[in-house]
Length: 104
Image (cartoon, rainbow, N blue to C red; front, side, top):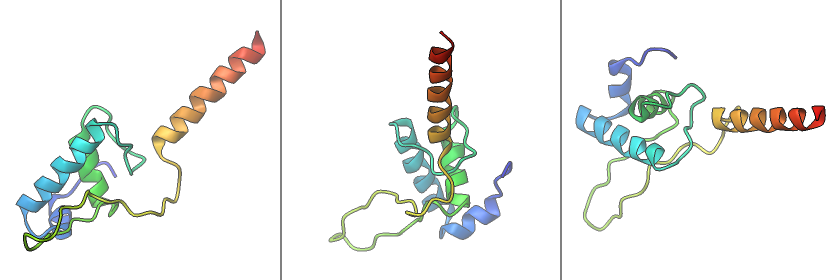
């Protein structure tokens, strides 16, 4: 997914305000160290990564009504088809390190 279509993203939220708040909240989580839920992410731009997660239906946008309800963090779907890119990078780095140690 190289391009994100704004019309598709607006279909995920009721309006632009909710979409921008959800993307900003998720981008903040990514900056604080949360791993991305999509394999194709931009490490230099967490907002684009957040928008890609919303477009891929990994993030659900909920509207909380009433003052009695507490705000809930943005959640991703529990099922993951493939390991994340960060997991793959970590495994590759570990494998290269082991390979280098075996050569010595």
